Amino acid sequence: NPLVLMMDIAKVFYTDDVETHALSNVHFALEHGEYVSISGPSGCGKSTLLSILGLLDTPTGGQYFLNDMAVGDIATDERARIRNQEVGFIFQSFNLIGDLTVFENVELPLTYRDGISKAERRDKVLNVLEKVGMAHRLSHYPAQLSGGQQQRVAVARALVGSPSILLADEPTGNLDSRNGEAVMVLLEELHKAGSTICMVTHDPRYADFAQRKVFMFDGRMVDEETLHRLRQEE
Ligand code: ADP
Ligand code: ADP
Image 1 (tube, rainbow, N blue to C red):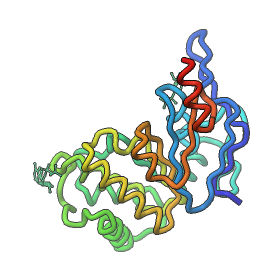
Image 2 (image 1 turned 90 degrees about the vertical axis):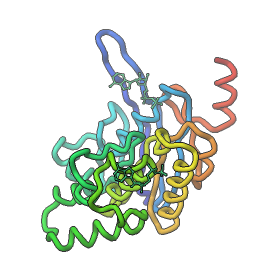
Image 3 (image 1 turned 60 degrees about the vertical axis):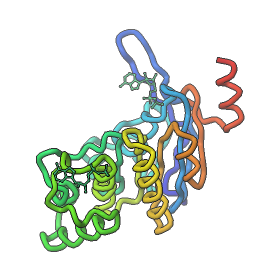
Image 4 (image 1 turned 180 degrees about the vertical axis):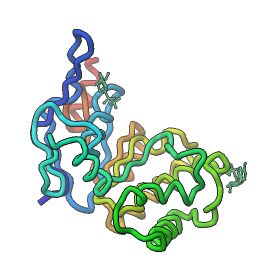
């Protein structure tokens, strides 16, 4: 079975008297080990989809299976537990905690888990920091790192719990092209080593790093030709 299976997913936001159909009729499957990019114009529903994929939010319709678990409408604390175990997030703004060191930032997700000793945590943290090339900056604070380095640390934090899926929302958005490319190369290496990755990007150059590209328009998944046609009609 695929790692991710979404069937007819819908998300409606109600704000005052306005209904926003952020997602409609979304069918999406992601195989184990796949690397997929999601692109489309601003406001088309990319972040909403990523939030649902990552169990940060729930759909208002449809069915979602993650690792064969029906996760569409489970209770909030159970959702948080599964999220902590199954999902690693990478954000545009890195989201590192400023008064924790590199080591402490990466260790943090493990401290929410039971049954991992301090020594085990240390091994895991050093191992992922080694993987992203940041093991020489254990005691630095985020403000003492360049943007590219901060994103590498954020990737390590996303990986440390061995999640089944890595979700990246515009991971290059705050980086210059040199650091952006470096992060893309890092994600490519992780993919080759077996990670399943779903990345939102509006930059076609970066979408090309993915193994498969999907496109969205106005809350729906469309193919690339349809997206171009719809944008011309706008
Ligand atoms: P994208 O990531 O592609 O820019 P989003 O998923 O952020 O798009 O937004 C999709 C649509 O849903 C937009 O019209 C946006 O205004 C709306 N939306 C997103 N989040 C909320 C929310 N919390 N409340 C109300 N509307 C929202
Ligand atoms: P880049 O060349 O990637 O933009 P920087 O010029 O920002 O990187 O930083 C170069 C090196 O100096 C990095 O390894 C970073 O860890 C270190 N560094 C940057 N700012 C500080 C700081 N305020 N305190 C300590 N080390 C720093």
